[in-house]
Length: 430
Image 1: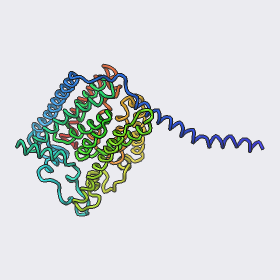
Image 2: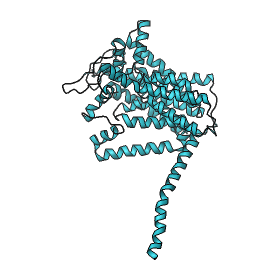
Image 3: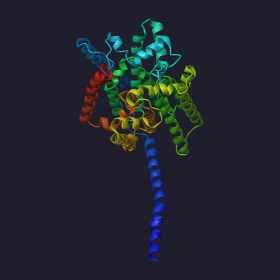
Image 4: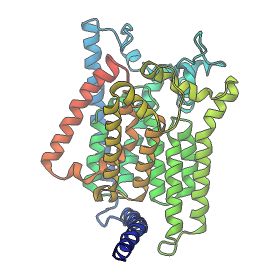
């Protein structure tokens, strides 16, 4: 009798644990969304003086980046260094600024895409130009034809021009959700950061960031219908626009769930649906275009994973596995533990209160982009460049919390850029 009576409370406690845990988890998620939706009362209007200040920061940043590139180019010439990990000869300075992916954009602007994918004797696909989207090379061709400057100069000037637009849009985005000092410091770190030298070369990053930050700013302003053309252009500029579609989908669900508290007008409902669906369709369509044009199933995926072969050998793409494959290949169990630690650190970061103060749009976008990187990219050296789209996180309040911390972050950013222009451009892969 005693044994039977004592077992009942134990069973009840066990069966009650799951609903209680689910209730706490639901409450935590609701709290997170409540926090990211709550506007920051310290937000202030943007003035012309603010924009002039941003432009001066951008100018100084670009001059510094050009100087760093020129320094390492000069060393390469003076000491007869070979260019890049492949040991290529160093050409003139304009060729130095239009190497790597820039050279592929230039070739696309001149002759278009190959009709067939290059393969080796085993049938494995080689890296090829289908990995690169068409908007930037089309713009290179237009500018080159209109001015007679050639694709190299046209590409560099386009990269510089759109970096100015990206800097302004990042500032406007953060000024809509954070304090003036946080937004200004984010722009400083964006302009002087480790990978900001990319804004001085003929890469599509500047254009993609401009379109991306513009789309996020429109989402913050709830001008959803206008995001559709911006997002479609971004989808044909660089991979990653699907992140914007996913973020807009989450925003839609949140707005719909809270429509009694926060009215969700029909125009905004339709605009958000149109923007999300059109961007998702455009983001997926490139793989279909590559398959139809080359008459090869999974041609785009095979092209993207061809860059993985030096690290992993022949491998079949499975979403959510690239980081684990990479870590296991080089570090075994310890590598898997590192990946799990990175996932846990990212989860803790997005759960923190300072992160929530960046608002709903930046919050769900960051989570979406983190999932995207983890799901489809291999964490090789290009990962540093692929982190540029999370630049809105530079508005995190801890980065501008004190004068001493600002000095540390700025000094680290400039020193890291000097190192990055050497390691990730001059003597290694970007």
